[in-house]
Length: 173
Image (cartoon, rainbow, N blue to C red):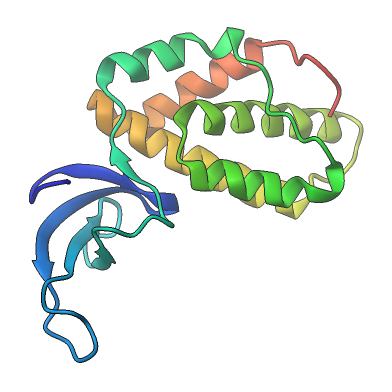
């Protein structure tokens, strides 16, 4: 269980501070049911109330600085994100984002970045669905890595894109 003052990753919301672990004094909610009160790191004016025992949304510790460094150093060796059936690509993207796995989100960013480059080189548009999930994965990944390493998000974003651009795509998207 997380404690007041902890910083965690909460689903696709990303990094959040645990403001409190408390019960809710509301009709229809058991008096002994515990809730996390979370404040998204990027939206200080927001609060999220979620049951401690909620299994539907991932709640986990933030990646350690060592793990973050190792992940960033592994960019050149990571395989691209595999989408088994193109028809279900959006479902694959959603599943990746919901998993809150930094490694999988980085693989998705690499894959979609290469796909975008290739399509633009051929004078084609980049699908809006792909653009949307590229942004979500990139924002969530960069936010967590920057928080973990105590670095500016723009610095982490630049590092990722410099190393992705140097990586040769394994296949055509």
